[in-house]
Image (cartoon, rainbow, N blue to C red; front, top):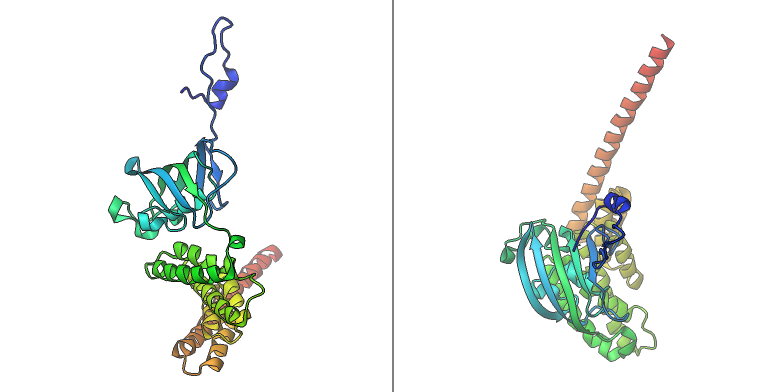
Length: 317
């Protein structure tokens, strides 16, 4: 394979008598930003077949070759369920990218630490914390999981219990993005489910409430505070006096420096449960931080006005 720079190609011509037998392959070295956050960049080396992609829960058979700092640390064929790659030492970025691949596709994936092995690294592969990774992935085959519309209510409720437990395992291990994948399945299956019996409605509400609360906690851990607030509000839409929903919304708002709104949430927690010591403590934190914030603003504005006054004095002189 021959590679030429753009400037070289622009000024290069073949002699008339020279037969051209080897086409020059042009690849976009910038790649495709799969989720528009710079976390997963894909360069396709071989296009796949058809238009179907694996979905969450699909069983995939892939070949992977992982590199870090020029060193090959993983090279194998592996079969796993999309969303559960971590159980096979496959980083979350591969799970996410597979949902955009077709059978037979061969691509290069550049993963930021967020989509790689994160701040913990991977001692098994001698990968340091916050390392950037490069993987070559070939999707050899896959079998899609059932879509929501292919499942009846009973099956959705059974599967909701399964993925809730899987999410809890990932959460306890600090694998918050993997936990989000599991909890999000419950929402996709049950949030818009209609025509349920009274017993099914009660069970569905319990699963949804737990899913929203757990998703909120995962997003707080990932510092996605606005998303955490949104998820708490969905939980509170199901149960407006839910203690965890109020507390976690207050926690997210406090981390966003929305001290007054956070304080109101913690006060509502105490209305629901006057014995909640954590909420009492957080109210004091809100008050202290609001005071510190106001003092900083006062100093900043005082200095700013003094600078304007000094400048005006110089102009007058």
